[in-house]
Amino acid sequence: MPVHSGRLEFDTEGDGDAIDLTAGVESVVRSAGVDAGTVTVFVPGSTAAITTMEFEPGGVHDLRAALDGLVPKQGAYEHNRLNHDTNSHAHIRAAIVGPSETIPLHEGKLQLGVWQQIVLVDFDDRPRRRTVVVAVLS
Amino acid sequence: MPVHSGRLEFDTEGDGDAIDLTAGVESVVRSAGVDAGTVTVFVPGSTAAITTMEFEPGGVHDLRAALDGLVPKQGAYEHNRLNHDTNSHAHIRAAIVGPSETIPLHEGKLQLGVWQQIVLVDFDDRPRRRTVVVAVLS
Amino acid sequence: MPVHSGRLEFDTEGDGDAIDLTAGVESVVRSAGVDAGTVTVFVPGSTAAITTMEFEPGGVHDLRAALDGLVPKQGAYEHNRLNHDTNSHAHIRAAIVGPSETIPLHEGKLQLGVWQQIVLVDFDDRPRRRTVVVAVLS
Image 1 (tube, each protein chain N blue to C red):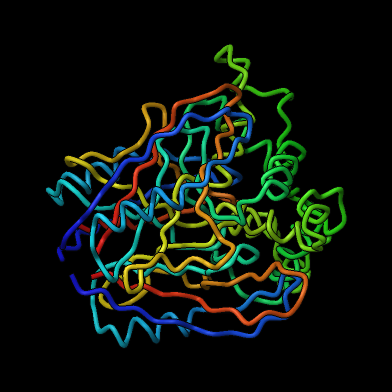
Image 2 (image 1 turned 180 degrees about the vertical axis):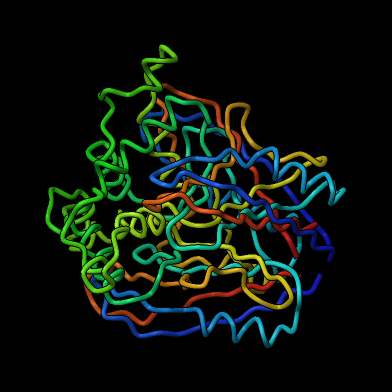
């Protein structure tokens, strides 16, 4: 089976910064030159996540605000206490949202909805350089 | 590698309506006629999600109620304000739960637990026609 | 396409117990002897989930505590009432976190971050014997 892979690199601001990966993923799919299969998008690291959303400023703001409320930055976190760290909230959010999504391909196109983009959300509490791994199976 | 795909169509009531996809996914697997591999289930759209659960009325009620509490319908949502929309809560819930799951196949069977079904949850605030894309890789 | 699969078995304590699957998944990958592809990790059952995290005591404690707060054990749960059961919170948490993750392989290695492990989280309210299914596609 042919496996085509690609790596995308981004500088994020952290703190819930969301990056639209769709054009980058589509570029890997085009290079692969395949019609049918699946595309797995994965972020290495334990303080960032992959999901899909309508990538517009209001939605990005609301997702960030909702997670700020559900898993606050400040708290009696053992990860912070034991490791003299400050980003336990980022670890928790990333584990809940998850590091991977897999999107089917049909006639060479990602089967996304019209208003649906693939996004990286970086929950860490500082700017980060992130690599996203894309694997096209066909 | 053979890639077998299928599309399932459903009318949902929105508002957290959950649809059991298992029989439809099994039907695509049977058509594929494969023994080993994986099945990816993906929902196009940014206000619905794919997960697994014990599909019974109590569990469906509880998941809906829990998400109503965690991400309320009413709120100071920028998506709603900027786009004159009403479903920001649906976008947030869908991004957290996620649009895809991948289930291994063994001897032609989905490796689900006895009380585990594949479900579509439609968080939008109105009835929707939904397509679910199934990709069998083997 | 070659599909290599494996099954990992664990006894958990339930109640948010987290098990580091990474060494077991790596062992299945080594047996497969493949360089490029994807590895899907899936847990059968509707009260456990698969995600990734930095597997250290503080982070495990914090994830468990966060979910205890977001989806409490006690509540007016219909699943519990209708089925004379006690673990509705476990079903809700498992459905939100999700039962599968897919990790790309490159040069025979899982493309995880340095501090990122693949984990099973068992939300059920009693000790359980769990099987995790691993599928390597290449």
